[in-house]
Image (cartoon, rainbow, N blue to C red; front, top):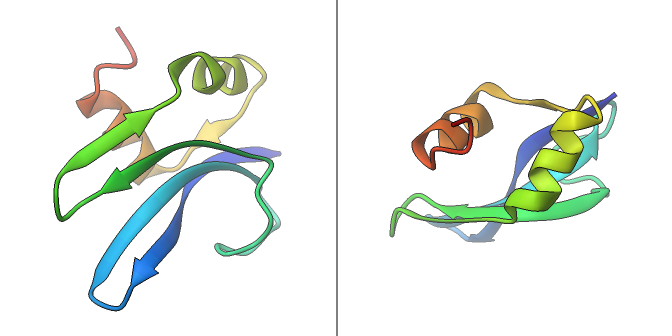
Length: 78
């Protein structure tokens, strides 16, 4: 099963997160299948590759709760 989840990057106290499609059995920093966006909570910036995200969702990928909230904030589920 594939999940859309956050992968931590950046330095200490300045975290940014990549939104990745990853196998559910992999750890947080494990090998991802595809990078689909990023989220910077400090600058409150979000970049989403919408066609690829919708493709993964159609194939049955499940977003985590936090990623789902980011998608709702970006109005992806209209």
